[in-house]
Length: 220
Ligand SMILES: [Zn+2]
Image (cartoon, rainbow, N blue to C red; front, top):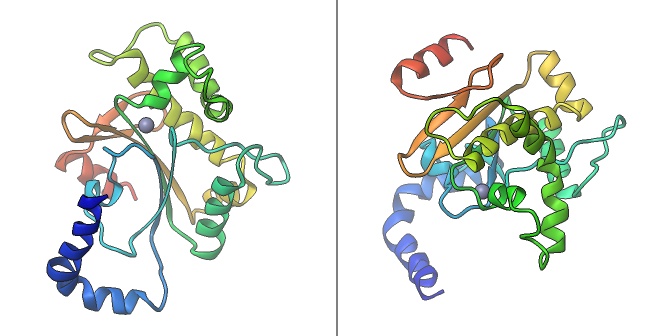
């Protein structure tokens, strides 16, 4: 806590001057371009990783970057918190993008693979059921991509599963079908700092470097 409190003083005295005008303007409202869904893991820092300023990312974080699927009438089958963030982002903020971002070494994914590891955490065990379809996909894969641990491949497959869960929300499906909303699946490798993106139509993820960035932007 000592570090956090001194961090506030550091922000007030050294960082705030360069952000002051931006915050004054943002006090009147926000119009972020993207809903960014990430794990609560302390090593995943969305604004840092995509070089964004205050006001640019509407961020939802939870253990395992999960999205409980919706019923056909659009009600969440899990926690209302995630569904509320999705509704707010899509219907009120009208974001143009939703990114689901998984990461390497994810404790949630390790727990999904370690049966019985959560006997003392019944809420967490129930929550992680939303990743079960990804675990099934992992079992069906013939081989792991080179260099990936099983829990890291599970994390990538979990990103794809959560993108599918997003599409169970009628408001998301309608916005995607109407061309107003684009979904992306990303995966962050903590050791290298590389961000990968899922290549649609494949199960594979590719590093977003300058060349791929040009192609991704050209495809917009
Ligand atoms: Zn995680």
